[in-house]
Length: 369
Length: 65
Image 1 (cartoon, each protein chain N blue to C red):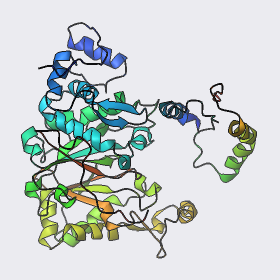
Image 2 (cartoon, one colour):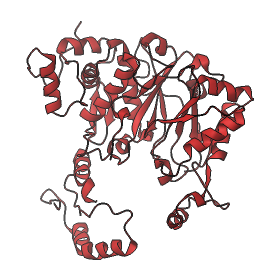
Image 3 (cartoon, each protein chain N blue to C red):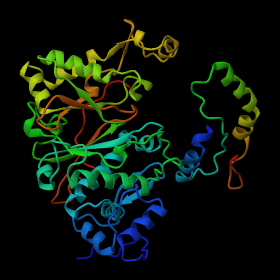
Image 4 (spheres, helix red, strand yellow):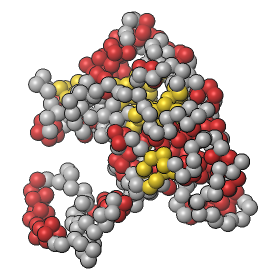
């Protein structure tokens, strides 16, 4: 059943997927990969997946400040290859990244490679076929790939994030095609990520966090949780990461532990809070690691502690922890942040319009800024 | 703003209905330049910046190229 008359401009093109692909690329609407033609029939089918009216504004997308209406998101979701069933997750992603604290304007324009990394929790993972294990960050699963891609197309086509013209990202990154996965809650020795953020276990939640890339951290030597945490800390405290460029009390960073790493750490009695503390303590880098010529600039910015260390963060709770990845083990995965952005979690439902008005769990105070 | 960001700035300004903001475009990048060089650029562009700040920017105003 049609959800009303679409207001998007309608174009006629030959009944040939390649012709549609050419049209999309010529107009700068795509990401270089083939698309699904957003026919009226397909867009209407996508709209059927939400009770929200097509004209409802999900969010305002910077820097162009385009209105991401449900219809516009649906068009981009079809282009991306989304099945209608995942559309509520795409809407949640747009809601999350258009929250002021996420600072989408910066991600869409920055010189670094920042992109939203989307993590799903709750029952939607199973219902939508969200991959949480092997290759969950890429190269596995239509839902993972298309939800992330749909968001990126909205960021481009509604927000205006055109490479070079508006997006000043020096390199871009593969995650700017898509970056979406699920937490493997069932293999986590701790409470699921969304529960720790204040949501109910049975709520479906989408979390958007900033990722300038995906940093694999490997370890086969550590026999204790303490040693492993030491490796992880030094796997993320490299001085060229973008987080170092901003005040230490800005931004949070998500570290994914494979199930085996999480088990090893938890087996030795670490709670998530203690993991966060260990990462905080372990990423206080001696200033001697920096070239001496940079010391005055670090000092004049107030980045150097009295003990001569340069912390990566001001508080342990800026290190976020979740469990994902295959049971083959030996790896963690860090999303370095560009810094001036906060991770946002929003609830969503596959059945109704709950969360449509941006209902989100009240997050703990972030401390003095 | 610096040259590399000029078109972004104009896009963002237009999106906020501030398309007539007076702008001065500086060389890119500015970071990483020696202090003396930044001071030289500032001296060279000072008059232009003052003019942009003090010029009227009503409907008839226009931004520097």
